[in-house]
Length: 562
Image (tube, rainbow, N blue to C red):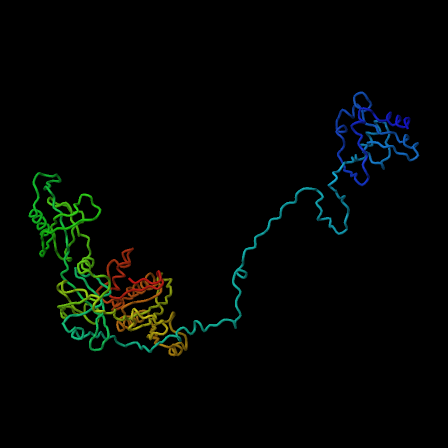
């Protein structure tokens, strides 16, 4: 055994054997891995000095003949060379040639807790699915599928699943009465004696107002004592005066500078009287008074003596920043006529008013109301207290709906149809549903082209209510104004009435020069306002044209009443 080990040691260099010899592992634990050629084969100096054993020494495994004489005996060695590999020649040249022709195999020791499966072939794998190059494949870009009209539209329900009765029978559930349109529109004024109370006064529930030439005009309802019905009323109140307050200075000013001259109330009186003379104000009243101040100006005393000036609203107003030699401030120049009246009379919103000394002859056809009267003194108008327990009178409501078409030649909206539903004697405290209230319907329409379709009139006559067919838009508007005058509604109701339908109706009546266009309100007018249809100021002008009738828009913040 010693001789055999000696022969093995002579074939293996002693300075490399210690580093290469490892304990022999079991065959089941030995795994092979293909490695790159050793670093020594890649060096250029190795090929030049292959014959020089002093400069480059290769590892030479034991010669094959050494193991042939062992008769199958294998001593225990720490070499990790596979037992099945035949022994190589010990010549360095032969070893270098074989390394270039064969791939070196190194036995690698694996961890005990890691098992590596050897790749095996499988007939079911397609060659195209194997990544032979070992590189990461190019990512596939996913195309976004955009919705089409067919995929984005909801699925149409079957024809037999649609119940059209919910919208075809809308009017059938309404309590519609016959309402034929009149050929003429009689005015029908109320006899003044029918509106007088036992004490000779008139009780009116006022709802709206307007200002005309320095006079306040109130619109409301009065009771016809002969029939018990409530009709529209117009009251014109004259001689409402402006109230201005002049704060005296302590010392008179001359050329913008204070002097040592003290100011008396008579000095302020003379200066204010001269100012009224320059403005050609014939009737005015001046008297001293004491007032308290509780606003933002710091140089105003909390309580002081003022000079009070009264003059009519039909005269020009004074500037708010007016100053004189004897007064430093003027208050009340911007107070409107209606504000002055309600503050003076302590009127809180629509309420019952008692009117004494009414003149029924002074006003004639100034409005479209059934009763007209005039009051010369505002003191004759007072409020009625809650002790009388008077309820608000019933109102007449008219719901309006328009259908329009666009005229591309004139770039304007034209009216094709107007439908009105009139509810009479509606109490503000009644909560009866609208479909159970009796109403009258009226529809006036014109063809969109030259004529209506054949048989259209016969179908229109079957409709519940009144339908009038007109040829032109001019006739359509004239007939609608006649119906509006006859029914005399207190409130005009509509969806998007405030910002769409009402403006279109006014513009078309102005364009077509409809006679009696001012019947949209309750005040008679001779001509259209000059600034209507011009900028933002037109909004307030349009609302003034409907003075006497409240506008209720159901599509604007759940219904707002102007």
